[in-house]
Structure formats: C-alpha cells, structure tokens
Length: 64
Image (tube, rainbow, N blue to C red):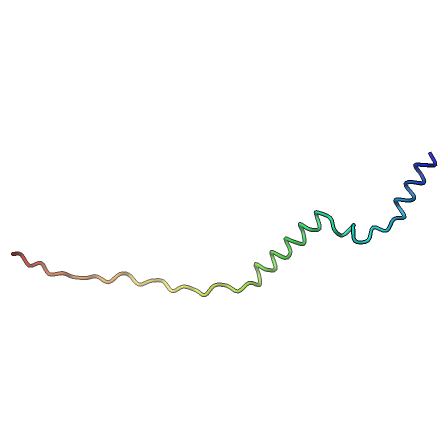
C-alpha cells in the first residue's frame, strides 16, 4: 500500500506546466477562435453590379 501512496504523491507533485495546456480540446478551441476571428476580420470582396438586360435587336423582314 505504501507503493501506491508513494506513486500517487509522486504524480501529484509533478509539474504539469505546458503539457496541461497542449491538449486536443484546447487545440480545437484555439483553432475555432482563430477561424472565427479570420472570418470576421477578412476583407469582403467588392460588390458586383448587376448586369443590364441584353439589348433588343430589331431586324426588318425583307421577303425576296
């Protein structure tokens, strides 16, 4: 039983430091925040003007 207590105390006293910040969940959340910031701050494309209707061409009918 002393071995278990010693292992628990040893693991509890370890410094987590950077390893606790580099988790998959934190990576996903950080990526989502970066994408959202990019989507909000990126320049919008210039607006496109609508095209006019095609011109109507009248041709006169000349029978032979």
